[in-house]
Structures are given as structure tokens and as C-alpha cells.
Image (cartoon, rainbow, N blue to C red):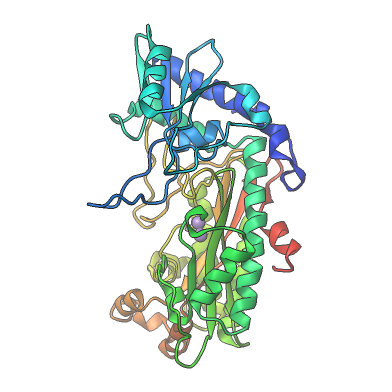
Length: 448
Ligand code: GLY
Ligand code: MN
Ligand code: MN
């Protein structure tokens, strides 16, 4: 694929980059339509779903295809219609409604790329859509409220989505800056002795986000909770005995683009703090090794070898890293994938696509959780998030396996109360290697 991004993301203004972004996206969409023989494409933002047997809506995220093409917010009920050779039409729903605040007219330089039509009701907007696609022989719909979109069209779009434009990378960098403000406040709240709930509230306030604006539910985990990979609760009381460790996996959004950032802290010096330092070094080394053309599966493998080395150096496991990997020992301590694509979705689609036609490259049997099996190319943005956890369920299986003798169980038992470690950055692949979008943002807040 052609190089499409020349911009230093730390200093980029998304507004100045949107026109190029829209051009690049429209070429992708029109190209996919042509290959799949569609002469019209309707992309609906969608409507908020209601709770079961209730009239209250759940929080709303627009169709990611809508979000890629426009930062319009709020977007509920709006649509985009693409016809080859014509300007894209944004059908903006601005209902006349005294129950809710009606959206303001769309403003900003990004609107220049669209013909904008305003509608005062969903019915009128539907008629507007019908008029725009009248005469099309093979219209396609990517609409959460319609039949599933054509799989081949989606494969083409999902495959190209991995490579980000300068606008997208600028948004991802800004999202990281917002997340970094939250991470700093959360670290300070942990040090001040706050419980999970208080840390979460400090994060939201400092990053200026409501819960519904987060790209994913914050993981705010003290002590053993850090061993629950997607820990979803926030205890209002401190654990008995206080906090020993703190894992925070928390992000932010900018114009719909996500940051996905994890850090781990220890309350005291000692073996767990040393493991954090070792994993942090390993994570930086993995990032430094990134080059375009690299197979992400091999990078994931390198992460396992690094975890094997750390376990050996710490006296937790015996054996060389290769043996610890092939025997499944590293898998007990690192049961998730090294990373994933990131963009308008935290786990951006297409991570296992082998090609634009929808062929799949499943992960190797030994790494079933790996979400990304593609070869890295310039301007793909991924997370790099090695972990090292003390998960009782997995450790019990290891303890009763033929590999048990490799483990110093007294060392493991002493570390179980700390839960685990994950260090996660968002990284743009470049011609020379990669650019870390997270570390400069954290450094600006005095964090590592
Ligand atoms: N926060 C979810 C993940 O790291 O993938
Ligand atoms: Mn992640
Ligand atoms: Mn994460």
C-alpha cells in the first residue's frame, strides 16, 4: 500500500488533515464498491439500543464506518450516502423534539467535504436516502438496523482500515494525551490511598470524560484484581490491609478515535516492583524491534520469550526461554495476545485478515487469544501490551501439570497477592520502525 502519512503526530492538528483523510477514505470506499460491483453505499450511524423491556437507551457508539468518514457528533440517526463520481452526502438528523436537545448544525472545516442535507425526522431522512439511491442497480447498506452488510465489501474495508491516515494518527495521539491526564490523576489517587472507585472518578475528572465517552470500561484493579484480565468492577472500599499494587487499563477518545493505555504500579519496593521494571524494559525492547514487514505473530512469540527470560531471572521458573515457551509455562503467565489494531474501535477490525478478499489467518494453536496475525506495514497502529500475571486458575493447572517442577512455588505464592502486570502503549509503524504515541503523552504528565 502507498505511504499516506507524513505527519509528526505529536504536533498535528486533525482539522488541517481531515480533507486528505476524507480523500484517502473515499478512494478506499469507492475502490471497494467497484470491486464488489456496488453503485451506491448507504452508511447509517445507527440508533441507540434500549435496555430490555425498558424505554431507557444504552450508551451509543456510531457505526465505525460512519465514524471513519465523519467526526459528526452527536450522530444518532444520521447517514452517509456514497455514489461513485459524486460528492458524499451527509444526511444529518436534527429532530424537532422538545424532549431532547436537538443537535446543532454541523460546523467545522470537515463539513466542506460533504453535501449536507438536514432532516427533522427519521422518516424524512429515510425518504432522502431512498431518493439518493434511486436508480442504483446494486446498492449496499452498512446499517446497524438493516440486513448484514455484504461480507466481501466489509473485508475490503476492514483490511484497508488497518493503515491509518495522518488525521487518524493525530486523533490517536490526542486521545493518548487525554488518557495521560487521567493516568496521572489515577496514579496520584492510588498513592493517596484511594479505593478503586475513587481512582476511577479521579481518572474521569482529569481526562474530562464521562463513563459513556470512554472507549472501553476502565480497568482499575488493586491487588489480586490485577490478575483478572478484564476486571470490570470498582470496589468502593480499600481492600483489607490496603493497596499493594495497582493496574490501570484506561483510555480516551478524540473525534471517536481510541487510546488504550495500561500501566502497573507497586506500593512498595521488592520482587513485584522489580518485575514491573523488567516488563517495562521488555515492552520498550519489543517496540524498538518493530519494522515494517514484520509478522506480528513473531513479535508475540518474542514477547513470550521475554516473559520466559524475566521469569528465569527472577527465579520464578527454571529453563531457557524457548523451553518455557514450548512447555506452556509462559502461556500460564501471559494468556492474552501481545496487541491488536486500534482506531475508531479499541479492538479495530481486520486483525486476522490474510487479504482484502476476506481470507483469514487464524492465530497459531499455541496462541489462541492473539487478535492480530497480520504483517505490519507503514501507518498501521497497534497496541503493544505484554503482561505477566499471577492468575490462580492458570497457576493451579500449571501446579498440577508435568511442568510443575520448573516453578518455584514459594516465589509464585508470594506474588499472587499483587495480581499482575501489564504495560500497554499505542504504536504507529513507520518506514524507519515505529513511533510511540503513548510514551510522549505520559511523559508530558510526568509519567513513564
Ligand atoms: N483495554 C482492552 C485491551 O487492552 O485490549
Ligand atoms: Mn489493548
Ligand atoms: Mn488496554
